[in-house]
Image 1 (cartoon, rainbow, N blue to C red):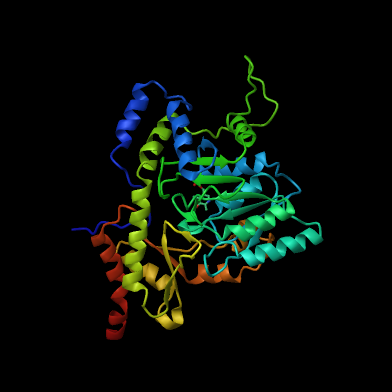
Image 2 (cartoon, rainbow, N blue to C red):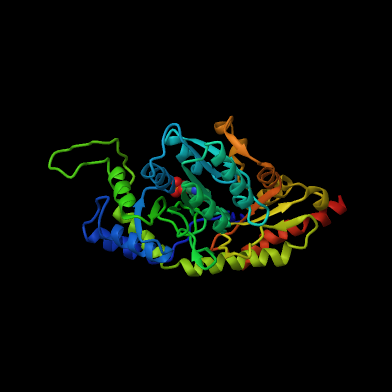
Amino acid sequence: MTTPRIYLSPPELTGNELGMLGAAIASGWIAPLGPHVDAFEAETARRVEMPHALALSSGTAALHLALLVLGVGRGDTVWTSTLTFAATSNAIAYTGAAPVFVDSDRASWNLDPGLVVDALDRAARTNTLPKALVGVDLYGQCADWEPIIAACRRHGVWIVEDAAEALGASYHGKPAGSLGDLATLSFNGNKIITTSGGGMLLGTHKAWLDRARHLATQAREPVRHYEHKDIGYNYRLSNLLAAVGRAQLADLDRRVEARRTIQARYVAALGSRPGWSFMPEASFGRATHWLSCAVIDSAAAGETRDDVIERLAAAEIEARPVWKPLHLQPAFSGAQTLGGEVAAQLFRDGICLPSGSSLTAADQDRVIAAIATTPALRRRA
Ligand SMILES: *Cc1c(COP(=O)(O)O)cnc(C)c1O
């Protein structure tokens, strides 16, 4: 008998998708717009407590449009987290602006607020302020936004919250996705809810969202013939996928609880292993633990992060390193970086463990056993 593979964060269906999708098809709304798109936007906006929302083909498209509606372009700089998925700064690069990568703090693994505040004050004195800051809520945990927002407001820097990994999390009681001027979500297959591929732009100002909607539909002017004053994009989400997204969104609370339970079981079983420390949950918020992550101090653990990943792979279990910081990526070589040592260390030692909301306790026990049995094996060897 072959052992079924355990994946890092596979998509989970609720059972309601097919019904919603069937109804969407029966209604004849196959075109990329329709009532499910409108409803998905309204339901997500309500959930995230942002007044306006725009459903899009990906989280990356949402980031790109967020920057465009803020007027970001060539000659501008945009500050962002170095410890994130490349999509965050790819979107900055699409606009022609230059990313500046900012290090993490150890308390949340997100933007170091002290570093951001000091560096913005310094940039104001040298007239090198960024046009915008794109802060990431990493692995389901919000950044420490209050000091960052206050500094951005003081210096007139726009704030984009990349909440792709944090739908369902909160910061001082406010939902992830409600904290910036604009926010972005992803519904990629590995995220907490999925449309198989999709994203959402949320914002405080209707004019921004109207502009984004225009750009996302090839910038077609509202006249009979095809008239275009701007270069547009084909970035809208289809009505069929929005139907899937609505079924998924209705299940969000359960998924948050499932992922938090998974993290708690990992911490209980592995948290006191020599050299292991799990990503901390900062006191300012409630994380979803979209992925359960830990750092492994190889000197204390007697094995490296890669040893653990390889052993899990041999047991048909998928685990991954923490994101490789963007300031270490060849694609962004030469970009300015503020700090970077914390993120580099989190990458060197950090592991992401299987965390999908459909992970059963028995499967999680398999992961835990595969990790926990090694020292004994080693001793025998
Ligand atoms: C997934 C992700 C994105 C991109 O979303 P897509 O829908 O895959 O384009 C952006 N930022 C972060 C932090 C992500 O994890």
